[in-house]
Amino acid sequence: MEHHVSIVEDLMKKRAPFRDQAVLYLVEPNEESVDQIIADWTPNKTTLKKGPLYGNTVFLYFLGRLPDELFAKIKACKELVKRVKILQEVNLDFLTKEAQAFHFDMGRSSSIYPDLYLSKYHTVENISPAQEQMVQKLVTVCATLNEYPHVRYPDENDMCKNLAFVFQQKMNEFVGANGSWWYNGDGLHPNSDRATLLFMDRKDDCLSPLMHEFTYEAMVNDLLPIEDDRITYNSINAGTAKEGTTDEKTTKMDALLNDNDEVWMELRGMHIADVIKVLSTRIRDIVDSNTGSALNTASKGKNGKALSVSQMQKALSALPEYREIMSKLSQHMQIAHQCMDAFTKQRLLDLSDLEQTLATGKTEDNTVPKLKEILGEVVNEFRQQPNSVMRLRLLAIVIVSQRGLESQDYLDKLLNEARLTKGELKALKCIEKLGCPLVKAPQSGATGRMGKIRGTKVSAYHPDAIESSNEYANSRYVCVLKAIMEKAAKGTLSVDEYPSVMPLPDAEGMLGPSSMSKAKSVRKMTSSSKWAGSSSTTSQGTKKKGHGGRQIIFMAGGMCYSELRAAREVMADTNMEIVVGSNRFVKPMDFLIDWKNLDKGEA
Image 1 (cartoon, rainbow, N blue to C red):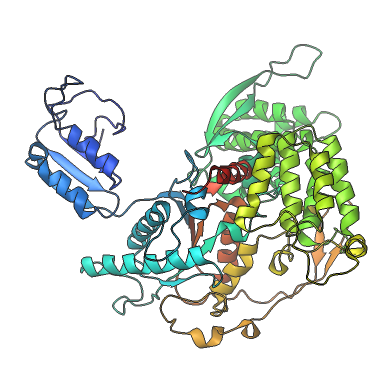
Image 2: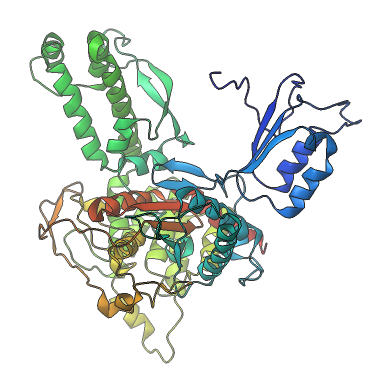
């Protein structure tokens, strides 16, 4: 109200008339939006609308470039044109996930995978509608950031190459049409370098979105009901347990987990075990303060055990001066415990160890097991797992991590044990449309195939995806994108493997893999516990500074939460600003559903 806005409404829904008020439209520059705006100012006999919905002042703001044909439509509506006071393109056709991450909210209501991967459009001159929409939106991101980036792409990925060249063309057009717009590295703004935009494709790493990850943010999005950062959790009502019992009543509460929550921002990238440890320590510190000493004595009892969730709630009511921070800490403690409840219920401890071995090619004690032994463990997991979707997810991890099974016989046996529904079986077969075979192609002239299979060992999914400094054994796997971002930030990403649309100013030092240094570490387990930490010998050098301007990474097909966390870690380690984006951020189930939509045929 302080900005004189009396009501905010959805353009696509039926709205009541406010003929004595001005109207401000903030819309996507598409035909559907423009047609609806024109309809607001056109009489309609069918709906009995006799006149305009609003008053004589109209402000039109479009989130991106308004195509000429849509501008012509607006000009043809005289009732609208005579009332327009402002028509402007604001270049904000995207949503922010957090300070360094954006998305386009594309693919949630209907999958864009058929458009991306089964489309008949395969050239720079003729890209698919969804691809063009992503490029247009990405131009608005760069316009907002004041970036006119160098554009790079994986050499062997045709879709990324097409996106890169079309983006370069659209960005050139934007710069040419906006003479007053400036960009970092234009020579007029000191202490700034041109950014680099790197296009990536989800199908080049189908494993990372499937893996169980035990950082706080990943677990919340994988195991709990959350939508648009809003989570509903069960809040324990302290003091409601019946006499002689410990069961207390709960109330469903909503919470927003975003950048406005400082506790969430601090904890989201931590392992869940560390999250609970940090929260417990902070709550204990407050209760151990002078103000809470009396409560502390009562809550500890004789044995001095840690506070339960119920005791935290009592601490909250007894310490009014700490109410706000205690409420926030208690909220996150309850959400974290719900993650752990789901973790225990779904038996993820042993399952995750199996996943890590398949992804990294090694067990937690650094040995390379035979594939046949690991597949035996997979079969045992299938027999104990009542949820067919979980069985589908594990089977997909097996196939993707090993880049196809060694024989059709192995596949048939696993499918028999997995007991998938017809729909799940169709979804599994669709991974071949993303370039991952269910069964490896036989090598020409191969002999004694079954003997070779019996001796086959588990292989790592990707050489760059097996080195992790994480102290927890069940978090050994590192997403493929992290190594790529590290090289990009340090200026060592190979130009041979990731060429640019236009020549890079410092490309000579990045001509091939020989110019890239590869760090290796030796992992030694400190305990046999699945949750136990692992240690590696590392040199404690000074933090390296990033190379060049801002790095923008765009993942077509959906970015997962392990990659979002990896971007934060690389930015912290290299002092290089990294901005990541995608058509949307995907949970494991989202990714499986996208696979299934590939069964619908060509777009």
